[in-house]
Length: 358
Image 1 (tube, helix red, strand yellow):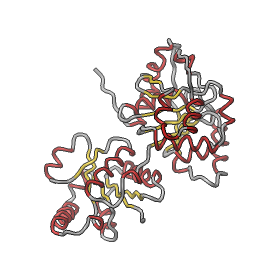
Image 2: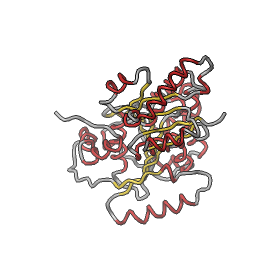
Image 3: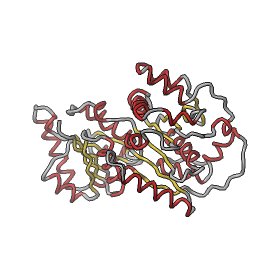
Image 4: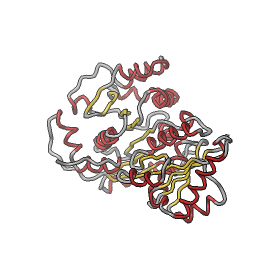
Protein backbone atom coordinates (compact mmCIF):
# COMPACT_ATOMS: atom_id res chain seq x y z
CA UNK A 1 0.00 0.00 0.00
CA UNK A 2 1.31 3.45 -0.89
CA UNK A 3 1.92 6.02 1.83
CA UNK A 4 -0.95 8.17 2.93
CA UNK A 5 0.00 11.84 2.46
CA UNK A 6 -1.14 14.32 5.11
CA UNK A 7 -0.63 18.02 4.38
CA UNK A 8 -0.36 20.36 7.39
CA UNK A 9 -1.12 23.94 6.36
CA UNK A 10 -0.55 26.60 9.01
CA UNK A 11 0.92 30.10 8.86
CA UNK A 12 2.96 29.17 11.94
CA UNK A 13 5.78 27.48 10.03
CA UNK A 14 7.38 25.92 13.11
CA UNK A 15 4.08 24.31 14.16
CA UNK A 16 3.36 23.00 10.66
CA UNK A 17 6.86 21.62 10.20
CA UNK A 18 6.97 19.87 13.59
CA UNK A 19 3.57 18.24 13.14
CA UNK A 20 4.45 17.14 9.60
CA UNK A 21 7.78 15.67 10.76
CA UNK A 22 6.13 13.88 13.69
CA UNK A 23 3.57 12.28 11.38
CA UNK A 24 6.34 10.90 9.14
CA UNK A 25 8.64 9.77 11.96
CA UNK A 26 5.98 8.16 14.15
CA UNK A 27 4.44 6.15 11.34
CA UNK A 28 7.38 4.82 9.33
CA UNK A 29 6.29 3.46 5.97
CA UNK A 30 2.61 4.25 6.65
CA UNK A 31 2.25 8.02 6.48
CA UNK A 32 4.03 10.99 4.96
CA UNK A 33 3.56 14.37 6.59
CA UNK A 34 4.26 17.49 4.55
CA UNK A 35 4.01 21.07 5.78
CA UNK A 36 3.15 24.44 4.25
CA UNK A 37 3.36 27.87 5.87
CA UNK A 38 2.03 29.86 2.90
CA UNK A 39 -1.13 29.33 0.81
CA UNK A 40 0.81 29.94 -2.40
CA UNK A 41 3.22 27.06 -1.71
CA UNK A 42 0.32 24.75 -0.90
CA UNK A 43 -1.54 25.73 -4.08
CA UNK A 44 1.55 25.11 -6.19
CA UNK A 45 1.96 21.63 -4.64
CA UNK A 46 -1.77 20.91 -4.95
CA UNK A 47 -1.68 21.67 -8.68
CA UNK A 48 0.85 18.83 -9.12
CA UNK A 49 -0.13 16.28 -6.48
CA UNK A 50 -3.23 15.86 -4.30
CA UNK A 51 -2.66 14.88 -0.63
CA UNK A 52 -5.00 12.31 0.93
CA UNK A 53 -5.74 14.45 3.99
CA UNK A 54 -5.43 18.24 4.19
CA UNK A 55 -5.32 20.10 7.53
CA UNK A 56 -6.00 23.82 7.06
CA UNK A 57 -5.68 26.60 9.61
CA UNK A 58 -7.98 29.65 9.66
CA UNK A 59 -5.59 31.80 7.61
CA UNK A 60 -5.46 29.20 4.84
CA UNK A 61 -9.24 28.87 4.83
CA UNK A 62 -9.57 32.62 4.42
CA UNK A 63 -7.48 32.55 1.24
CA UNK A 64 -9.80 33.19 -1.69
CA UNK A 65 -8.32 30.63 -4.08
CA UNK A 66 -8.29 27.89 -1.44
CA UNK A 67 -11.93 28.59 -0.57
CA UNK A 68 -12.75 28.31 -4.24
CA UNK A 69 -10.93 24.96 -4.43
CA UNK A 70 -12.79 23.74 -1.36
CA UNK A 71 -16.13 24.74 -2.84
CA UNK A 72 -15.31 22.93 -6.10
CA UNK A 73 -14.25 19.89 -4.09
CA UNK A 74 -17.56 19.77 -2.20
CA UNK A 75 -19.59 20.18 -5.36
CA UNK A 76 -17.59 17.43 -7.04
CA UNK A 77 -18.12 15.07 -4.09
CA UNK A 78 -21.86 15.70 -4.09
CA UNK A 79 -22.20 15.09 -7.83
CA UNK A 80 -20.17 11.92 -8.24
CA UNK A 81 -21.02 8.48 -6.91
CA UNK A 82 -17.66 6.72 -6.94
CA UNK A 83 -15.71 5.84 -3.80
CA UNK A 84 -13.93 8.53 -1.79
CA UNK A 85 -10.75 6.49 -2.09
CA UNK A 86 -9.75 8.71 -5.03
CA UNK A 87 -10.59 11.95 -3.24
CA UNK A 88 -9.02 14.04 -0.48
CA UNK A 89 -10.45 14.84 2.94
CA UNK A 90 -10.22 18.48 4.06
CA UNK A 91 -10.11 19.24 7.79
CA UNK A 92 -10.21 22.56 9.62
CA UNK A 93 -7.26 22.79 12.03
CA UNK A 94 -8.75 25.27 14.49
CA UNK A 95 -7.62 27.08 17.60
CA UNK A 96 -9.71 27.20 20.77
CA UNK A 97 -11.44 30.49 19.89
CA UNK A 98 -11.83 29.95 16.14
CA UNK A 99 -14.07 26.93 15.70
CA UNK A 100 -17.60 28.34 15.83
CA UNK A 101 -17.28 31.43 13.64
CA UNK A 102 -15.21 29.82 10.90
CA UNK A 103 -17.29 26.64 10.70
CA UNK A 104 -20.45 28.73 10.34
CA UNK A 105 -18.92 30.08 7.12
CA UNK A 106 -17.62 26.68 5.89
CA UNK A 107 -20.54 24.38 6.51
CA UNK A 108 -19.92 20.67 6.59
CA UNK A 109 -16.15 20.90 7.05
CA UNK A 110 -14.85 18.48 9.68
CA UNK A 111 -12.47 19.91 12.27
CA UNK A 112 -9.58 19.05 14.61
CA UNK A 113 -8.31 21.16 17.51
CA UNK A 114 -4.68 22.13 16.85
CA UNK A 115 -3.46 22.83 20.41
CA UNK A 116 -3.19 19.26 21.66
CA UNK A 117 -0.62 16.51 21.38
CA UNK A 118 0.37 15.28 17.92
CA UNK A 119 -0.80 11.77 18.85
CA UNK A 120 -4.26 13.02 19.78
CA UNK A 121 -4.49 15.10 16.60
CA UNK A 122 -3.68 12.05 14.52
CA UNK A 123 -6.23 9.91 16.37
CA UNK A 124 -8.96 12.49 15.66
CA UNK A 125 -7.85 12.83 12.05
CA UNK A 126 -8.19 9.10 11.46
CA UNK A 127 -11.47 8.86 13.35
CA UNK A 128 -12.85 11.44 10.92
CA UNK A 129 -11.12 9.75 8.00
CA UNK A 130 -12.66 6.37 8.72
CA UNK A 131 -16.15 7.85 9.07
CA UNK A 132 -15.60 9.84 5.89
CA UNK A 133 -14.71 6.67 3.99
CA UNK A 134 -10.92 6.79 3.77
CA UNK A 135 -8.76 3.93 2.56
CA UNK A 136 -6.90 2.97 5.79
CA UNK A 137 -7.92 1.86 9.26
CA UNK A 138 -6.96 4.04 12.18
CA UNK A 139 -5.45 1.24 14.21
CA UNK A 140 -2.94 0.42 11.46
CA UNK A 141 -1.66 3.98 11.28
CA UNK A 142 -1.83 5.41 14.79
CA UNK A 143 0.53 4.27 17.54
CA UNK A 144 0.72 5.24 21.16
CA UNK A 145 2.98 8.20 21.77
CA UNK A 146 6.11 7.01 23.57
CA UNK A 147 8.51 9.59 24.97
CA UNK A 148 12.01 8.99 26.31
CA UNK A 149 13.98 11.17 28.73
CA UNK A 150 17.71 10.73 29.31
CA UNK A 151 20.51 12.77 30.83
CA UNK A 152 24.06 11.87 29.68
CA UNK A 153 25.46 13.66 32.74
CA UNK A 154 22.88 11.99 35.04
CA UNK A 155 21.28 15.23 36.19
CA UNK A 156 19.55 14.86 39.56
CA UNK A 157 16.78 17.04 38.08
CA UNK A 158 16.06 14.61 35.22
CA UNK A 159 13.43 12.63 37.16
CA UNK A 160 11.76 15.69 38.74
CA UNK A 161 11.47 17.08 35.21
CA UNK A 162 10.15 13.76 33.90
CA UNK A 163 7.50 13.64 36.63
CA UNK A 164 6.40 17.26 36.20
CA UNK A 165 6.32 16.74 32.42
CA UNK A 166 4.21 13.60 32.89
CA UNK A 167 1.86 15.57 35.15
CA UNK A 168 1.49 18.30 32.52
CA UNK A 169 0.76 15.75 29.78
CA UNK A 170 -1.74 14.00 32.07
CA UNK A 171 -3.84 17.17 32.16
CA UNK A 172 -4.83 16.36 28.56
CA UNK A 173 -4.19 12.63 28.05
CA UNK A 174 -3.92 9.31 29.84
CA UNK A 175 -0.23 8.96 30.76
CA UNK A 176 1.83 6.07 32.14
CA UNK A 177 5.22 6.89 33.67
CA UNK A 178 7.90 4.15 33.65
CA UNK A 179 11.26 4.67 35.37
CA UNK A 180 14.24 2.57 34.21
CA UNK A 181 16.75 4.16 36.62
CA UNK A 182 18.77 1.91 38.88
CA UNK A 183 18.48 4.19 41.94
CA UNK A 184 15.31 6.21 41.43
CA UNK A 185 14.78 7.09 45.10
CA UNK A 186 10.98 6.89 45.02
CA UNK A 187 10.56 5.05 48.33
CA UNK A 188 12.32 7.82 50.25
CA UNK A 189 11.06 10.73 48.14
CA UNK A 190 7.40 9.76 48.41
CA UNK A 191 7.43 7.64 51.59
CA UNK A 192 5.94 4.58 49.88
CA UNK A 193 6.58 0.90 50.51
CA UNK A 194 6.15 -0.95 47.23
CA UNK A 195 5.14 -4.62 47.30
CA UNK A 196 5.77 -4.94 43.55
CA UNK A 197 7.93 -2.92 41.19
CA UNK A 198 9.01 -2.65 37.57
CA UNK A 199 10.84 -5.99 37.54
CA UNK A 200 7.73 -7.79 38.79
CA UNK A 201 5.57 -6.14 36.13
CA UNK A 202 8.07 -7.00 33.40
CA UNK A 203 8.13 -10.64 34.50
CA UNK A 204 4.34 -10.85 34.54
CA UNK A 205 3.93 -9.10 31.18
CA UNK A 206 6.56 -11.19 29.42
CA UNK A 207 5.02 -14.39 30.70
CA UNK A 208 1.37 -13.43 30.32
CA UNK A 209 0.91 -11.38 27.16
CA UNK A 210 -2.86 -11.87 27.11
CA UNK A 211 -3.59 -9.70 30.14
CA UNK A 212 -1.14 -6.80 30.08
CA UNK A 213 -3.52 -4.35 31.77
CA UNK A 214 -3.88 -6.63 34.80
CA UNK A 215 -0.10 -7.05 34.95
CA UNK A 216 0.34 -3.27 35.07
CA UNK A 217 -2.51 -2.74 37.53
CA UNK A 218 -0.98 -5.27 39.93
CA UNK A 219 1.70 -2.70 40.79
CA UNK A 220 0.19 0.60 39.61
CA UNK A 221 0.36 3.73 41.78
CA UNK A 222 -1.03 7.21 41.17
CA UNK A 223 0.61 10.43 42.33
CA UNK A 224 -0.84 13.87 41.48
CA UNK A 225 -2.70 12.36 38.55
CA UNK A 226 0.35 10.45 37.27
CA UNK A 227 -0.02 6.69 36.87
CA UNK A 228 3.35 5.04 37.45
CA UNK A 229 4.98 1.66 37.91
CA UNK A 230 7.35 1.72 40.91
CA UNK A 231 11.00 1.67 39.79
CA UNK A 232 13.13 -1.42 40.36
CA UNK A 233 13.99 -1.96 44.01
CA UNK A 234 17.13 -3.89 43.04
CA UNK A 235 18.67 -1.73 40.32
CA UNK A 236 21.44 -4.21 39.66
CA UNK A 237 18.92 -6.61 38.13
CA UNK A 238 18.13 -4.11 35.37
CA UNK A 239 21.42 -4.98 33.69
CA UNK A 240 20.56 -8.69 33.70
CA UNK A 241 17.41 -8.36 31.59
CA UNK A 242 18.06 -9.06 27.89
CA UNK A 243 17.71 -6.44 25.19
CA UNK A 244 15.07 -8.63 23.54
CA UNK A 245 12.98 -8.68 26.71
CA UNK A 246 13.21 -4.90 27.16
CA UNK A 247 12.11 -4.31 23.57
CA UNK A 248 9.29 -6.84 23.86
CA UNK A 249 8.10 -5.29 27.14
CA UNK A 250 8.00 -1.78 25.69
CA UNK A 251 6.15 -3.01 22.60
CA UNK A 252 3.62 -4.79 24.81
CA UNK A 253 3.03 -1.55 26.72
CA UNK A 254 2.59 0.33 23.46
CA UNK A 255 0.05 -2.12 22.06
CA UNK A 256 -1.88 -3.22 25.14
CA UNK A 257 -1.47 -0.80 28.06
CA UNK A 258 -4.46 1.39 27.16
CA UNK A 259 -2.52 4.64 27.72
CA UNK A 260 -2.30 7.51 25.24
CA UNK A 261 1.24 8.45 26.25
CA UNK A 262 3.96 6.31 27.84
CA UNK A 263 6.90 8.25 29.26
CA UNK A 264 10.18 6.39 29.88
CA UNK A 265 12.69 7.87 32.33
CA UNK A 266 16.08 6.27 31.55
CA UNK A 267 19.05 5.93 33.90
CA UNK A 268 21.92 3.65 32.91
CA UNK A 269 22.18 2.37 29.36
CA UNK A 270 20.22 -0.82 29.94
CA UNK A 271 20.50 -3.62 27.36
CA UNK A 272 18.79 -2.55 24.13
CA UNK A 273 19.08 1.13 25.17
CA UNK A 274 19.34 2.57 21.64
CA UNK A 275 16.65 0.23 20.33
CA UNK A 276 14.33 1.50 23.06
CA UNK A 277 15.12 5.11 22.17
CA UNK A 278 14.34 4.28 18.56
CA UNK A 279 10.89 3.03 19.57
CA UNK A 280 10.10 6.44 21.05
CA UNK A 281 8.53 9.19 18.97
CA UNK A 282 10.53 11.83 20.86
CA UNK A 283 13.56 11.65 23.13
CA UNK A 284 14.43 14.56 25.42
CA UNK A 285 18.16 14.77 26.17
CA UNK A 286 18.55 16.87 29.31
CA UNK A 287 21.49 18.81 30.71
CA UNK A 288 21.94 21.64 33.20
CA UNK A 289 23.49 25.11 33.17
CA UNK A 290 26.91 23.73 34.08
CA UNK A 291 29.97 23.29 31.87
CA UNK A 292 30.64 19.89 33.45
CA UNK A 293 27.65 18.52 31.50
CA UNK A 294 29.23 19.38 28.15
CA UNK A 295 31.72 16.47 28.16
CA UNK A 296 29.18 13.69 28.92
CA UNK A 297 26.83 15.17 26.31
CA UNK A 298 29.60 15.23 23.69
CA UNK A 299 30.53 11.62 24.45
CA UNK A 300 26.87 10.57 24.21
CA UNK A 301 26.58 12.26 20.80
CA UNK A 302 29.71 10.45 19.61
CA UNK A 303 28.32 7.10 20.77
CA UNK A 304 25.02 7.82 19.04
CA UNK A 305 26.79 8.62 15.77
CA UNK A 306 28.22 5.09 15.79
CA UNK A 307 24.77 3.49 15.95
CA UNK A 308 24.09 2.19 12.45
CA UNK A 309 20.81 0.34 13.03
CA UNK A 310 18.75 3.20 14.45
CA UNK A 311 17.85 6.67 13.20
CA UNK A 312 17.71 8.96 16.19
CA UNK A 313 18.90 12.44 15.24
CA UNK A 314 15.48 13.74 14.24
CA UNK A 315 13.90 12.37 17.42
CA UNK A 316 16.31 14.05 19.84
CA UNK A 317 15.24 17.26 21.54
CA UNK A 318 18.06 18.79 23.59
CA UNK A 319 16.95 20.60 26.75
CA UNK A 320 18.82 22.63 29.31
CA UNK A 321 16.80 22.31 32.49
CA UNK A 322 16.08 25.51 34.43
CA UNK A 323 17.95 26.27 37.61
CA UNK A 324 15.88 25.10 40.57
CA UNK A 325 16.56 26.41 44.07
CA UNK A 326 14.29 24.60 46.50
CA UNK A 327 14.36 24.03 50.21
CA UNK A 328 14.01 20.49 51.50
CA UNK A 329 10.30 19.74 51.83
CA UNK A 330 8.20 17.01 53.40
CA UNK A 331 7.85 13.90 51.28
CA UNK A 332 4.12 14.43 50.80
CA UNK A 333 4.78 17.89 49.34
CA UNK A 334 7.84 17.12 47.21
CA UNK A 335 6.15 16.60 43.86
CA UNK A 336 3.85 19.58 44.52
CA UNK A 337 6.93 21.70 45.13
CA UNK A 338 8.50 20.61 41.85
CA UNK A 339 5.23 21.14 39.97
CA UNK A 340 4.91 24.76 41.03
CA UNK A 341 8.55 25.71 40.72
CA UNK A 342 10.33 26.98 37.60
CA UNK A 343 10.70 23.30 36.67
CA UNK A 344 6.93 22.87 36.59
CA UNK A 345 6.50 26.02 34.50
CA UNK A 346 9.14 24.71 32.10
CA UNK A 347 7.41 21.31 31.88
CA UNK A 348 3.97 22.78 31.23
CA UNK A 349 5.39 24.98 28.51
CA UNK A 350 7.01 21.91 26.91
CA UNK A 351 3.68 20.04 27.07
CA UNK A 352 1.75 22.98 25.66
CA UNK A 353 -0.69 23.31 28.57
CA UNK A 354 -1.77 26.31 30.55
CA UNK A 355 -2.94 26.36 34.14
CA UNK A 356 -5.26 29.17 35.14
CA UNK A 357 -4.69 31.22 38.26
CA UNK A 358 -7.38 32.35 40.67
